[in-house]
Amino acid sequence: MASKTIEVSIPDYLTIDQYKKMNDYKFDDNFGRLVHSVSVMTGYPISKIRLWPLESLTTIANDFAELADHKQEFHSIIEWNGELLGYSPVHSSTLGEYIDLENLSKDFEDNMHKIAAILYRPIKAHRFKSLSFAIKQKIKMVNNKVENVFDWYTVEPYDNDKRKQVEESFRDFPAHIFLGAISFFLNNASLYSLNTLYLEGHITKRKMTEMMNDQLEVLSQTTGAGGGLSTTSLSPIYYKLQGTDQLPT
Image 1 (cartoon, rainbow, N blue to C red):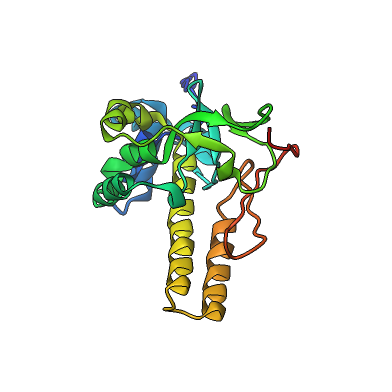
Image 2 (cartoon, one colour):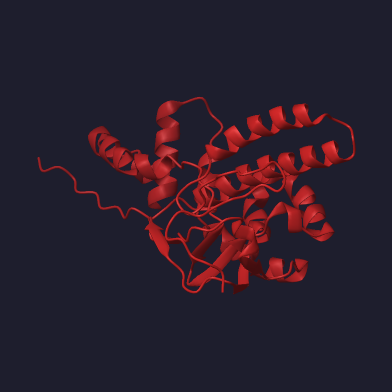
């Protein structure tokens, strides 16, 4: 008897919506989780996947293994859907951004796409003479090497109404980029808070240094190509992008 041929399309990356749906499976059943994950990534209904030969299911699952292993990487500037987007750093966030981030984070899984639309916004201006890109999973990530990258570009001012207009499209945003940005945001916010505590006299400089070094170690583990971390002082913190050195214009 001839084996059944199963054709699947492997996406370029796991989207926020796919990531959320994969996490919707709450049962302690490895086989059931495998079937559920393959259904999310291939679009095939679970009822059909359960009829596949186990060997085919295993082969397809292995093909998707690297895609599903969403290693978190932070990238400050990316090109997604033909638009140049920049991460909005915590030190320049408005009160409105903080309030919306806090409210949306109360139901994090359901609101991931909305949070992504806050963290990554269109770049309105930058000081690069030209942009160098690294391409991974068909996502363009700016690869210019500069110090304090956040000084090199300006994102669109935060507008809650405009965010609501575009947030649904962020369901298709790369999950690994978003998770890296969240990790970076939380750690960087902690660094910012530590510096504030020191300036207000609540902690000593030595204590601040120790705590910052711990945070930087965690932070450095989440940075990827286009967002490599370096620090040259405690205040301010400097970030550099990997790639070609370039002077500002």
